Image: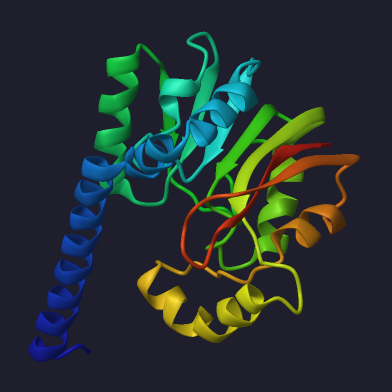
Length: 226
């Protein structure tokens, strides 16, 4: 049987977590285009890459952790969009952004390791700057393969670990414990490309590029096909 103090304590912890999720959702909504804007101010690289990567999306498109919707403006209007977003407080901002852009979005609760979609039902899965922070990247990629139709595509833009032996890689590994705390679980030295190549996709086509960002400058963009 729970004591009054335990009940009050649990209530306070829940209230604190709830406020944190609400605040993070609001903060993301205010700055959802910051990443794009910073890169655009330096050069139009990221926006152009997104525009090119998402230009031919069609059918059922599932985005993993779409946040408050920074990718929505790049999507064609006629797709069937599903958003798997674990933070309920972001759903309001996602819906608002989708309505502003004339997109219909089916918002669902879930996480990267458990995608709320039927097997072999999705034409395209999208992930941008998500794989660095999922608890288990192998489980996440198996979830992507499960929901994709045969021949379906996984479109990604992710930052990755610097090459072994480089000064940047040593710095990434050294700072990783602190970075994960301040970066909401982000692993700066995660071998995302190796995980993609070993996941079981029929093909993985990608391009490396660098962004002018501290610690996480190495990026990849590409398409993995089931």
